[in-house]
Length: 416
Image 1 (tube, rainbow, N blue to C red):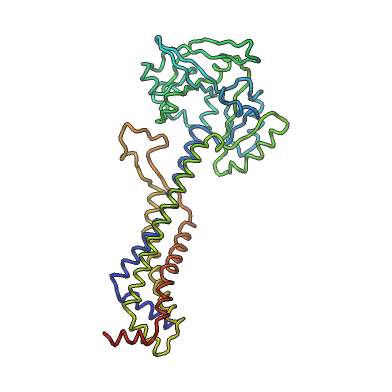
Image 2 (image 1 turned 180 degrees about the vertical axis):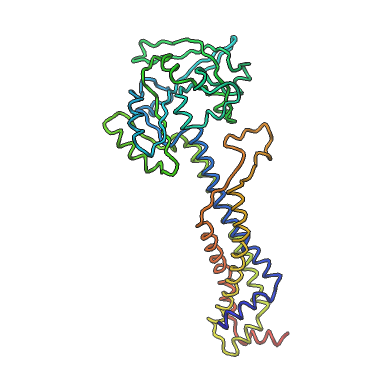
């Protein structure tokens, strides 16, 4: 207890140095807390956006479809789609299964034409899987007005408005290339949507499933079924059961990550970059505190010599300096838990609107308000970080103090 008391008093002998060390530890720990929640929130936000915008949680396709996906085949389909959909929905963890048909379509209007990726969707199930229905900026969603949904940039480029008629051309489903044929029809522009993501807004159109099925000469068939799992259920745990239900069929279930590999890879790269930057900052913090403790040792050479002369063992001297660095870390931990906890609450419950800082002409497809995602163990990790900082920064100075030769230490005192 006496050693602890002496170490505690020594911490406040140089108040300025103590404050700077405490601030350094606190900043490091706050970075740990905020960094973990920030990266998890970033990852969760991007992944949820992909799930809500595009992929759903699980997709069911013909086993051979992905190998020929580039040609958007209409002959590798999920047949009897309504029957399979009903069977999958018997799983209480699956909220919805929406059928889609992907095909290439040429859209013509007032002498201009453009070949686009078309996606046929069943409006009601699709609205339970993705958020397309919330992105209509003009006209109606397909449940009220069958026809075509067009992105706002494309509509502005061609002067299209909701209610206009457009000519659409596409190849029908065929059993062989020998009898290939195209179908032509006029469709109404039901509405204009805006994702804020040019890759979709300028290159993808949506068609109601019933119209597209007749247009493509397909009967109760779909390119895929896109499943959404109910909140609270783990898609990874549902996937094997979905695959089990597909046993004996030519269909395969895939996780959503299979259809968002670019995004998943980009987020992983961002996480690695963040980890590297954090490691550099952490090393700088440890070096800074270690230098401060080394200065403290040098300033107290005579004191160490006196303590050793009156019988204090090397081990005790080392423990005293380690205790001092531990107290510094403890004060930093306390400060960081208060400040970091407050910042974490704000970021998780209020968020940060970085959209207001961005130019108006730069699209933000995944939303402009960022919210972090914190866990209780983030704070435990930060505490361990503080303890590790105390050990790494205090160990070498403590060992150096303990190895001081008594005569030299006392000589330094006499020289003063």
